[in-house]
Length: 391
Image (cartoon, rainbow, N blue to C red):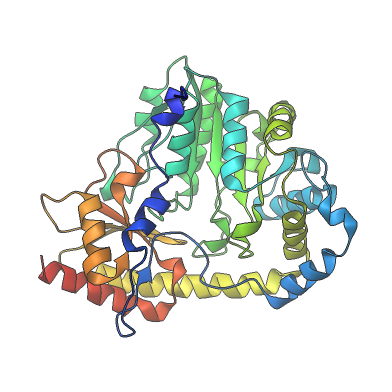
């Protein structure tokens, strides 16, 4: 029998796949179809202009070859310019690496920052793939307490008390997955100051930055001339251009970290998929109006779902933003997996249990409302109400 890596063997199974197995093979009546609020995917397809462009580009033999390890130079330059306009400060192409999705961006960043036995601060509830990767690589996760009364925004002073001489980074996801919470600019500044003072990285995952409720700049961290000594910024093109299957993300950081990321990237993928990089570049250069339309639609959808979910009797809306809502369920004595399975099997409503996002989360469910239209909000609310009545 093979001897397996005990670290990886101890990692939880992929949560989305587990939830999908609850409804696999089932048929659903036309008047009560399955509403899938489990996986965070845009509820719309990429524009025809993009798919037509990619179809034509596939005729070019260069599209089927490797790119530079850190990405197509034109894409790195375009993203650096976009970030410099949006955030302010000085960001150049040399600060940008293109990765095979934001998940890989996180893995590469951790490979560059930490080794087995080191620590990383990961607030609860966390994005499950982050914890899975830390566990698989022998990095200890430090969890500040979840603060539902503050919308899930972590406390800077508590994090400061957790940091030891083995701590290498603080990881923040904003807008948050799973809670949807949007961290205030002053909170991000406080975490930046803490990380800089303690000589560790602030890893800032802004996968959902294109779906903020306003056009206001979310923070000014890049305006610090020395930002690259502290900030490791992660981003994804998957949601903004609806190209989740093409796997394109990015790391924005200083040259010291980039040199290590390049080594790791060369080993695990050599480069991000070429056609995905072409899609991202096309999007940055030509899809600004389309993105603005989707941002407006998602803002409207968030407002509709906030209204519907906040008025539910028995259920408590903890936070909501970008693609997600985080609900406290009313089923005392039942863990989150049991509640999520009950909703899936009895009410044709697929959500994710909070326990997939960390300890102490059995009272909560993640609702990925971006998957559906605004017209689904009253239907979802109705099914949650019916579930409470049938307990």
